[in-house]
Image (cartoon, rainbow, N blue to C red; front, side, top):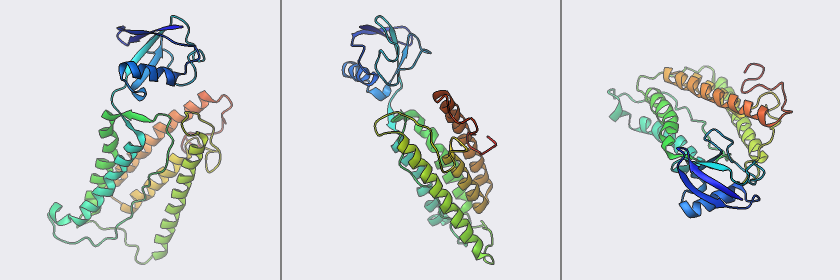
Length: 283
């Protein structure tokens, strides 16, 4: 069958003569061979810019017939999500020690820091992404959250010579309780990521319904546990910028959770109706 390829402005690109059994991935490879836009840069819609998006399956399975028009959009230069995560979390890892060891060059006070340094419980887990890449132009936006809002804004005050942490000297058992709770939350967060990872076979975009470890009550249990971790982190550091970062992080995760929750309900007709998005019985 023949399919007509056009840009979003209506400009003609080409006319491909391909088999209905050709998969979307194979079609993108054919376009890449001829026009050098690698598959991750390509977005295709049927008939118009708001038409059905070609994601997976064969062309016949997604409803493409002889003579149909496919609309092409260049998504721009892409970067892998895994590398994005590494760059994001690298910020606080480098910035916090910088404030701690270079305090005499940053602050106007020469006094040494007396407080106990709070270990940053920030881990990079193994993910399987529905999309392998993202536009590289969005990297500064993603990094700004951890590099500026967390690393700089929290680190500057956390390691300031005048910073005074909570006095827990008379309650050493409280430190162990907090540490234990954080370890449990980190484990639960890791377990949630492993559950989500196992629902998607390697090299596919297949999704399933997660169960267990909080998923029976909420769609995004991993965001719930991460929210609790940031709440504890902000309470321990007790800085205004820490509370601001916590609020921004939880708000953003709530937005993502609501989108994923609605996506689950749309994709799976029998999705559990009693589940909330991120906070059990609330949201």
